[in-house]
Image (cartoon, rainbow, N blue to C red; front, side):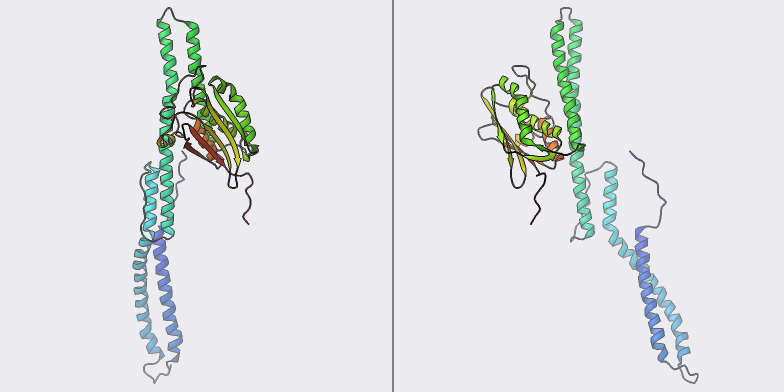
Length: 368
């Protein structure tokens, strides 16, 4: 973390405003007194035999003017100090909230009351930023804890199998190697998923024109053997849907959706429908699959990392196909957000899930 540059302590903003207020008051008073002296006293005779003459009034006026100037200066400083304090009070509250946030406390809010003005708008924006930061930090902490647990699990399994095999003189070496390979594959898949998720969040990619319908077709062809082993029928089609984005990330997005729809399906005779649509407001990729009924509150948690739903737990398929590492929809959501899009999950009537990814048009029409 970079060390903040040390600055020489200068005059405070409150004193600057106070001196500014006092200066305005004193200058205004001086101009008023000068106007009296120049425009009114000139009409007083300057003759010696007249009393009071201009000299007498000037001699009486100057001490009074000096006293008035000191009084105005005191009023300007005192009143300016109070007014500056009232004006800067919201900034003090925002500064204290920022200091607490810098110390790690993101739950504090400025929460300014009163009608809207520049300070209230600033406080509201700052509160919204703190709320978003708090949510992101909490999500990252949950993700780090879950990722640590998920990465620890295959390592612990490998260690256990090796210890058992070492103590068992009749160990099956070939079976041990196969099981260790499965566990190692699981760890590699999880690590690659975490790296892909980090890449999507940082948006480190070049945007290129890409047709989502071609990516959907390629994904279906790649995953067709998996679908056949699980006795799942895939229906793919739709419009030519051009967007701007990363071909690799968008390919991974559709692959995750189709893979998720295949492995979280009915035990047999399930279906997956993949469609691309071009609508006036956006481009959409829709993946719909049959499967067990899902409650709305379960569907809302499926985009969280390592969440698989009540019935969507990781198991081994008939052919040893992994259901996944629990990051499929989380990666889809991050990739969609990195492309300024969104992910919508809805339970399918009759069981299963309907997933829609909305992405912006590559060249949106200009408003008339």
